[in-house]
Length: 423
Image (cartoon, rainbow, N blue to C red; front, side):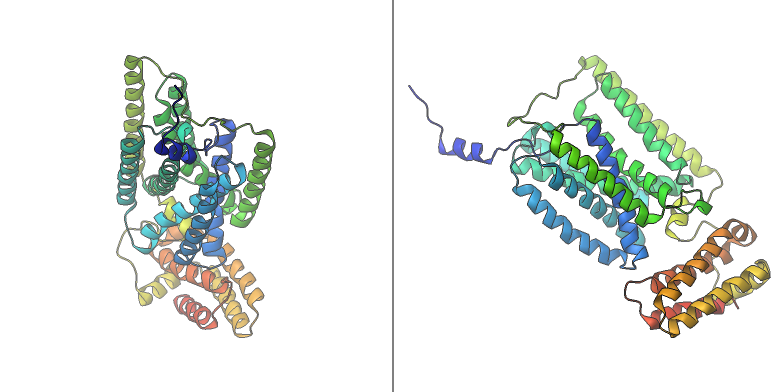
């Protein structure tokens, strides 16, 4: 007797697709880190260099994310270009959401890290309750793909918050900060090779690649005066976008990362239950050791690397200065020749703004930024609170002068305020 499929079975079969994500090879991790680095540097370039602003940048990328995700979700199999374009965009979007919480709303990084970790656990919980698998080898239905991309978005937000919190706690510079996530990824890889749960180790590594890629991007883009390589955010974005494009073209031709299965395949490498418990205990021990390291680093004298990266105030003893106090401190504490040089550059920039020479004003503002950054260590050691006050006035000047459509009133107001502080 021939059994024909029921209507429900036909609908289910129609909804099932070839796996919508790539095989997890070395290429997966290479391009994932490249995408994360681009996400960090490209967002910074649009937000700060072009002067679009954090909220506006987030709105733009939310729209772009919705568009590229719609294209990706309409496909019935994994295609490298739309998939990795979605990863690039979601990396920028997730980063921006965390930055808005931190920079615009003042949410502490420890709190946003905790909230995103709980949210990710909730996503995984609902995903498992509905589908009984969290394996990326089983993304063959629309609901599973929706859960997958939601989890990816939250991992980027969580990785951003956890990575920035690490910088805040430790004060490590751009180069040094690469070592911690790199070491943790190495440990997770070793534990996976020894037979730990593939799903758990995959998502741990996925989260850790975000701070790793972001720290690499910061290291490349940060000026050499601040122990970076000085490529700048635009050059870093272009280099890594080119690397992503070359890799995607290679994968499109070679199909080295395509999973041609309709059904979830076994995830493969599993050790005996006792060994898995032992390896899980090892991961927990590594997590506790990492918390201990961060606690120790936080207790050492340091200036927040995150504050320096974002141009915000470092930790200084004493209450913040007001305008009158700052002007007095600058005159008393800072070298007269240096203050005179800043004042000259600021006056020149103001004159160029008033004459309508936007390019000239932007170039002169860069001279101010360079001179200020070069003197940072010396000035901070002389009077940290005065340095912080002036630094917080220079940032609005740079944003206003470098805006894609400069507002002369804002430019003049920020420049006049800085000149008042400089005497």
